[in-house]
Amino acid sequence: MPLIHVEMIEGRPEEKVSELIRNITEVVSSTLDAPKEAVRVIVSEVPSTHWGVAGQTMAEKRAAVK
Image (tube, rainbow, N blue to C red; front, side, top):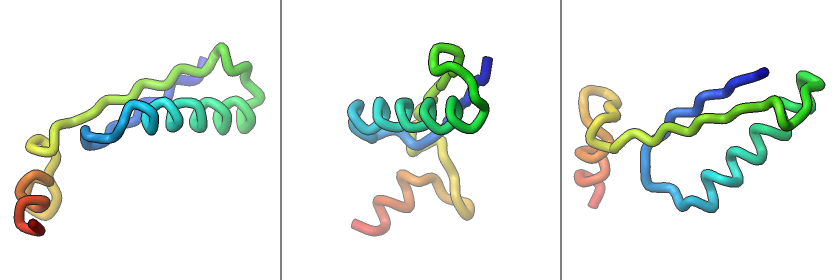
């Protein structure tokens, strides 16, 4: 059973997360010839204060742009 774990910064609408899960399931099922029922997708959303790029949190980077 394929298990795909996606980590991303929180804040996307639930509809987009659901769409991502559906699309990943389709691609994995097709690529591996696995039944969709066997594909598992976990989406972990990380707060922007806990995601760093170039020494800054994404929250800090976003605040600097405003």
